[in-house]
Picture 1 (cartoon, rainbow, N blue to C red):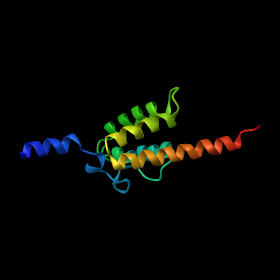
Picture 2 (spheres, helix red, strand yellow):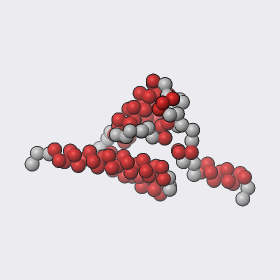
Picture 3 (cartoon, rainbow, N blue to C red):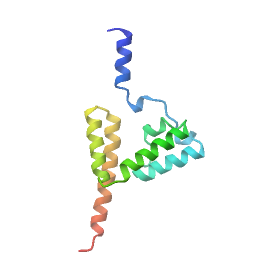
Picture 4 (cartoon, one colour):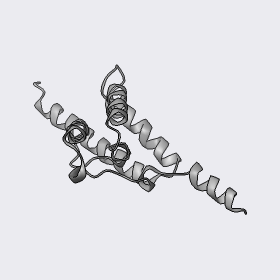
Length: 122
């Protein structure tokens, strides 16, 4: 196998966790604001690597976050179903980081649903 074959194989299966990221602690206030919105919406205490790889370009980060936010958190298909679809794709693509993240989001959403069901008046 040649170097070019190995190089193209690596890039074919490149995972977000392999890329350079901009940490929250190193981010400018505008980037931190987007990071905070991401953490709030996903109910996580950390910023997803996918977004940290875009932190050095605020226009790219904002644009992609707004697009993803509207896809995941708006519309008639429940967010939990959308996340479960993303999880299954991540599993099929064998991305351990993505599976871990989407498992955390699914767990958070299920907890939220259980809490809401507990508040229902019978």
